[in-house]
Length: 387
Ligand code: GLA
Image (cartoon, rainbow, N blue to C red; front, side):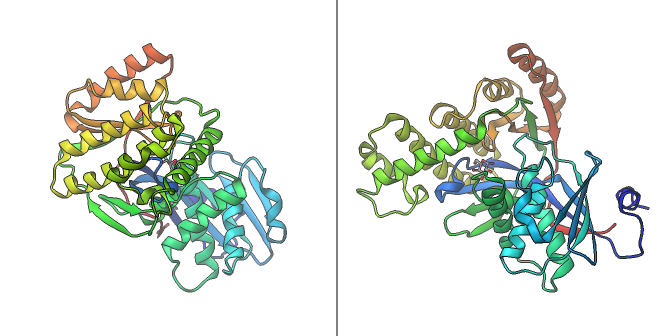
């Protein structure tokens, strides 16, 4: 018997009813950072690690949640879903169920087991994986039509924005829901148009390095960046007919940037506008099979996040600086919100061991922290799986 099904029966007993299983991945964003709440472009990939959920219907209105790493059952009632926002664990799941209900879908009582393989708090979207896995599992048990995966991403985002209170953009949930094996997901967050771009990496690999830095004030700094972008947009609107920074071209920005009086706000906007341009160039060079140029764009993205958007910090900067010293590295940058979390590096597979040793040692010497390294595969988005 599948080991997760065995654990499910250990916790909830085997009552003969059907148990189904679903999976949703974590993601790593290759380029296009802090653009998704500005109507800009992003280019994430899904990973082959994520959240697996096993689910079974109940006859009452109770929702029982259990996680393989926490080993305790959280019980909630569908009648008062508003009241679990601050519980220690289970609020992401209950927020999604709440949003499913509000959107008018059928929802019923159920038992769920969660098993996560995405490192938590590392900026690899373990939350989006939980949200999308919960969404598809509960939806699929109580509704006949297959779920619209874009709608699923929005439900996850709304749960995070409204229930959890984290003001994130759409990238993470969209990637977790819509990712495709061996492809990058190029998304225009203003129009929600998207395209799958094949990642022909050949002998190169996506290597993720975790700073293992606790991200203290990350949420408040994230929100501060969002309002600075808003302020910059308002200033540019005096001359430009635009709804978001994603609509502002590099030329328009250069011509009208004098309208943004605050130096810091101007730097934030400069990052967003040029980052969008870098995403477009990335798609272009990748479609031509030019990985080297893609790597250079990734490194430029990091420099901009460090110098203009100021969301890196000594840990992320050290990992990138050390990465770029290793042979076979085409590019390296922070990924996700920043202030800690992970970097993503494109590296020749022959140099991975050397990378782990040298970057690991130098990182510890300079920061006193120990980094973790992962080489994940690029995997598919949310789906039902066989038990
Ligand atoms: C976090 C958010 C995303 C996005 C990134 C920065 O991961 O959840 O929506 O804004 O930060 O690119």
